[in-house]
Image 1 (cartoon, rainbow, N blue to C red):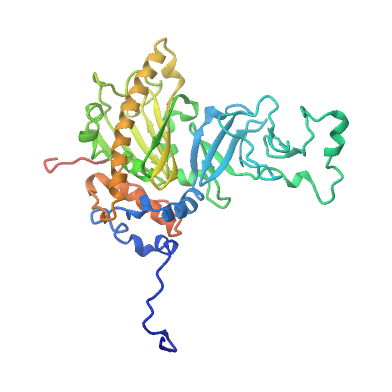
Image 2: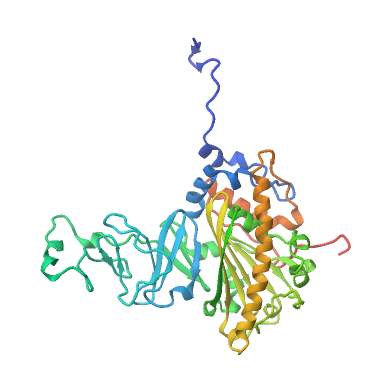
Length: 434
């Protein structure tokens, strides 16, 4: 028998906090919230816990602008990007006026998934449900339920399907549910949160920093997919630091010298680094293979920009090409990557453009596979319950600290954009003699 007084039950342990209470509590992250000089890494459960992943999906991915493809995939009305964001399947397209549109990928009748695989909506420029033939235009308006042009219903039976006299039904009320969509440069973004700030708020000063590259004119040339047995954040954190180059990338270190790396980030939801000057190619490969675009200043003609767009997209912009890496989390320990090589038209005018693209594709594939091998090993180690978290290496890992605190902000319900460095380019590798 328990003994009680006005305060409660003696001897009963306090209730254990739920995963949601732990992962949305500022105190959980106190050792990562201190300045980077003293900080430890994000809690291991952030990379291994299904409960963390589920909360992160809603608080990070369902509230952020997520890059889902390239503008050349939806250049004309009827072209489609099928995206998966925070567990929701989405349709991104252009309407007949050339404006971007995005919708949830289900029919308003019985929730059938409308489109699947790599597809367009064809010359009809209409989205047709495969179940009961409800049909929608590229603005999401419901056109037919199900009678429409091209129906296979025999003429003498069409009257059975006429819903014009159904009481309380107006097809104007049953259009596809819209999703916010926007673009910057050659990237297309969606945001599930109707109350979120515009894309420009998340990008901060990045469009200004890359304005000279005229990114809206660039087009995707090569694509490749990778399945990764690691959390998407490990992929991003690996991309954000060059501490690992000498040991993981023997080829890359020859064309991307440590001493030439600078932090390159202003206010915005991104982390950024710059290499200047760009090293020459070696027999192992490199950044070359194609001529640079015309009209770049001396500064941009001799620099590479490496940006991680919060929360899950890598963007590398060089004078002659760009490399984008879309990392789609499939679970706490699995990520699907789409790697894309993009160029300005100036760089692919020559007869040897395909050869140059082949060279770049081979080099990026080599570098990416080296990264994937190491991040999968990190995932294996971080899953060991004995691992308590690690100490930040402040000189090299400030971008990781910046990124991890963006994640923490969203997990605990804070919506803010981090400030940038005082200097445009901050040296990352400084010795005591410099």
